Image 1 (cartoon, rainbow, N blue to C red):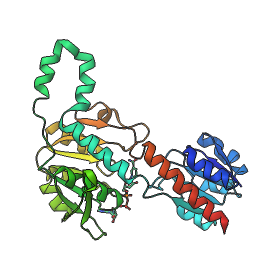
Image 2: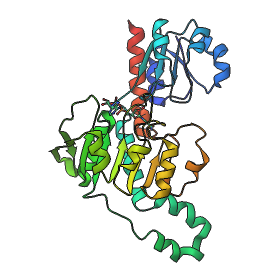
Image 3: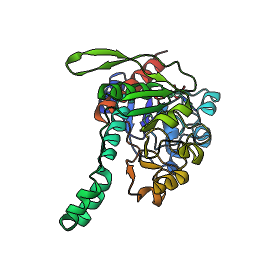
Image 4: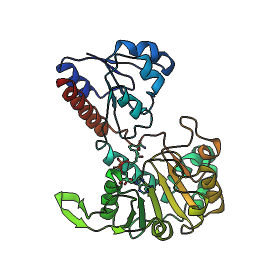
Length: 315
Ligand code: NAD
């Protein structure tokens, strides 16, 4: 069995597959060459970069399995693959904590102006030091503020645990999921059970100091001009979920008017070439879709994916 790990795979996962007798090639074959080159393989693993669309599936009749290291399978035509008898696996739980930690890296960064200060200090440097000091004088603390979570699945819950540990009030809205109590693990192994306030989307919009989105993208923005107009003045937004969940043009207007004080974005409308106004906006914190990109998450993803592939071909 030959497996192409086209967007890479953690070495431990690769080793597990090789120990189980698979031949694993880690390559980065460009998308337009895949219809020919993937024909040699029985399975492909991808992250978010490689697309496995119907045309590629049609070109590769030997393909039996598609593995997605990560959560979102929007780069794979899953229904078409299944129709053709190809199994599709993802690793939904492995990266939740890493994504949740990036939410807080972004939030803490933004409330103390780190993205803008990192942009400006190297340029304006010593000459403007005191001006910049004044510009960034009104930072805020997270403790005691209300965090609104939209989408209370795996990542939303991890975010809630950290937020409760930090001392924030948490309100959460989910279209489908029951909102449970969460276990918050404090230092020294102390575990406390805490409550998350169940809210409507409207409550989250109106009551939150910061809002973080953790839903899939279905077909339209959850936050457009109307929703942004009804938030608290100066709300901070985080989207480490999927581009399109916040209408970027409406967001730019809201940032410019001060309705939104900052947006921390890891995902964009047009990846990998986000629009200039977003990339250059002083109130936007940018990361290039790296929510799951920690050593720990990548190792867990590789191990989980390898386990799923081994189990699949065992039967
Ligand atoms: P999940 O399926 O566990 O949770 C999603 C939750 O959203 C579910 O509880 C669902 O009921 C809820 N939901 C769906 N539509 C909704 C709506 N319209 N309004 C409110 N709630 C809604 O998924 P997850 O593992 O928590 O992942 C969440 C998102 O994060 C996904 O879009 C995933 O692609 C993204 N993600 C991004 C990165 C990154 O690198 N930036 C990494 C991992 C996951």
